[in-house]
Image (tube, rainbow, N blue to C red; front, side):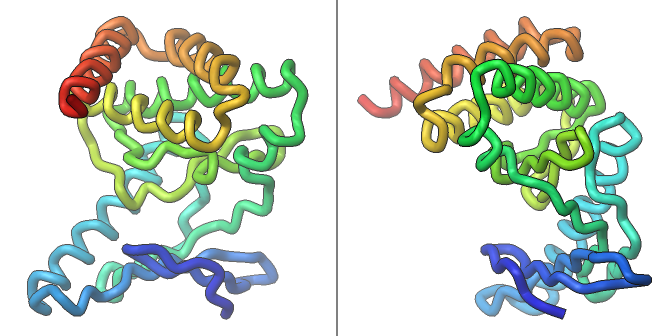
Length: 207
């Protein structure tokens, strides 16, 4: 077993099971929290991520298959998606390919929001192209909500991530993402209005 990533909330380990690569996500202990509170938080967030991944798959959004769920030890054992991150794929694709990918991303986010799923960390590092599908990974900051405010914030954070990482192609990406989103989510107008409201709020706070 080999650790491949450590974030603020969890460690990711690469291992094999039945001759197949797997990922073990281990939600780490926070020393600054009282143990009983820490246990409760880790258990709750691990369970929530398991539920989000499962519901996303049921909503036809590609996510890693779950092979095991160890609630007691705060671990999720899941499929290793051996593809290329959209972050890198954008950098090596032409305009037409970028438009196709972005449109599909928008559709998938529309499916998530239709199912009441807020990803919470929509970045091109958390999307992987594999077997002609785009997989969404790392729902560690996600939650269930059908509030327009939460959906608008989810998309707004994606826009900010694109602006930071893919500023040269942001106009192409965002236009196609919104087109795909509109195709899948009936309340898109309300969400887009909310994004504009959130932008105005941010500008006001900076003054």
